[in-house]
Image (cartoon, rainbow, N blue to C red):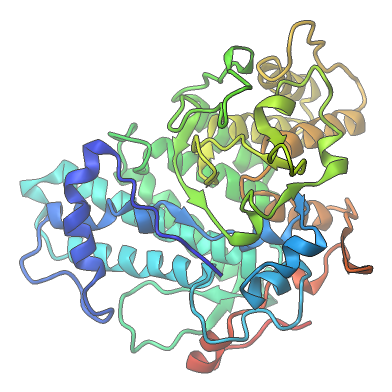
Amino acid sequence: MKYPIKKTCIPILAFVLTGCQKYLDEKSDKSLSVGASVKDVQALLDYNALFNGNCAEGEASSDNYFLTDQKWSGLYEEDDRSLYIWGNDLFTNTNNSNGWSISYQQVYYANVAIEKLNTIDRSDNADGWNNAMGQALFSRGKALFTVACTWAKVFDSSTADNTPGIPLRVNSDFNTVSQRSSLEMTLKQILSDLSNSVFYLPKSPIHVMRPSREAAYAMLARIYLYMGDYAKANGYADSTLAFHRELLDFNVLDPNKNYPIAQFNKEVIYSETGYLTPIDESFAAIDTSFYGQFSAHDLRKDIFFRAYSEMDKRIVFKGSYDGSANKFCGLAIDEVYLIKAECQLKMGNAMNALLFLNELSSKRYGAGFLPYRSNDKDEISGFIQQERRKELVMRNLRWYDLKRLNREGYNIWLRRKLNGKEYVLPPNSPRYALPIPAYVLKQSGMEQNGY
């Protein structure tokens, strides 16, 4: 699996890049040097090649795209081929360049930052200390949630206390052997980190490459939606929208551009990208039945997609909020609108659900847009899920949605066809929790997911 390091620091943070790399190049069992300052800790947290990346194994396992026989055979890494077909031999080699490793690197360096900050007198730079502490807590909670969504079963409140979760690394001591916590304890730790980050983070960051209070609220809304706690997800969506709610108007975007949506645009709350070879546009084609759901009046059809080339007519994705081929998987206000709409419906406020859905949709359809209207709860739910599916394509959220929707009885089957053979992933399959990498099991002796 290939995880290229993205070294595009924003100009306002570029001065810290050298310092950040210095810390990341130290031996893994060392913390920041004695006498390190808040500025040194902030330099570590500003290393966006690490902290603004996300694992994409879930996206690569989902149904947003397909690979032709030739493209699948052309994948160099065995893990990439196995990931695509939900294979039993996934992550069995010794290569640790995978999303598990990347996520726990984020956890480790967040722990280093937290431990160092706890030795520094905050009185000399209280604002800087608080900001750094909030960023570290946010980064740890976000990384742990990514691992939980990818390598653990879907959260179910009735069984979470007896369901294996993930290792909760809350210190930088490598001598502590990793063991899996229950899924209930896993989510409690994640929610604790993100809730605590709110008390330290500024309302607005100097740049969306850094977390903010708004980002923490949006992340909490996402997590509570995943857990099925719609009242809390709704509340955190409200808290997010209180900061800003301005949407991009797709009517004014140029669909002829290679990447019509600008990086760091006004919808972005927190910028993050994810990458894996199978979902790169040179390999992945958008699922044709999914592409067919975009009507001629849906502006996203031309803004999100294009033919790969004159010779290769595969439909590929170009609608990243990163303004490039990199897949944006951060936090943006459009997702919050959809969370709000879904929660309002679940809480019995169908008309409010339609208001939020139509406010978003009015910016995504061309002239003559007809607002969604219905008095039927199931029909409105269908509208919301259809728009969520289309709006958040290739945002590293589909795996998360498949798990939670199947928990609620949506009965979504995934199918792949390769070389005349069909591969199937049934709803609620144990394979929705990916195999923990073999090298992790060897080092820790922890329990593998059962299949």
